Length: 85
Image 1 (cartoon, rainbow, N blue to C red):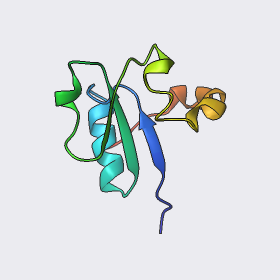
Image 2: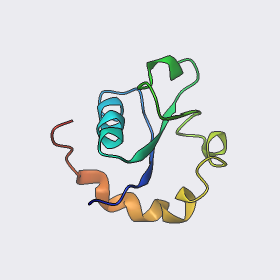
Image 3: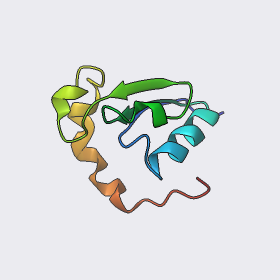
Image 4: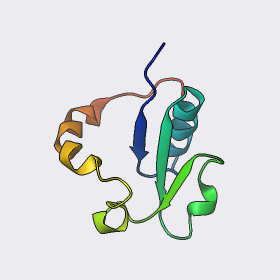
């Protein structure tokens, strides 16, 4: 059985972020989806929502405290393909 993870998704209303968030939730993960103010109504239903600005960490960092120390580890994911989303 796969391990359920807690994930922070920036761009939760976008063409990749929205289906990715839904797919992760369907697979049993907890996805916290970030959306800009005014766009939160376009976030996928259910799950955790966070309104903030992806370019201003202070708008979401208190809700995602564990992400800061790991941020530099995510650079190698820039070429990851999402299949089936």
